[in-house]
Length: 119
Image (cartoon, rainbow, N blue to C red; front, side):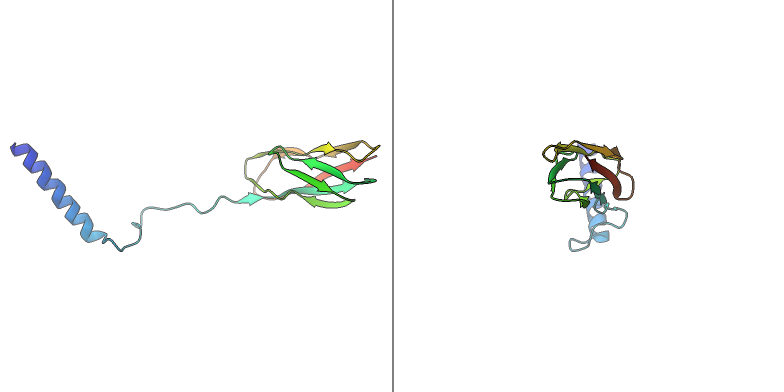
């Protein structure tokens, strides 16, 4: 019984002491650091030689319809260390397309050098 009372008394004093250091309306204690949002990076590049529209797909399932030659960028960015793999899901009619620089690991910058060439 004596030990139980001592434990309760110690716990009560500890709670009172911490309450004095961190009142209810105070922000989080200064030693707790919360990470910011995880940075994300876009995946994109250039389409060349298309005689019509084509649909690209990234490994995360994102589809992107590209209507003409020029630059493209998937709407859904990816986090650093994510694997990306750009493929041609639907090629232009009567054409075949190849993808260069279409796969890899996202680093700390956007991927801008994917090249889709259609013939």
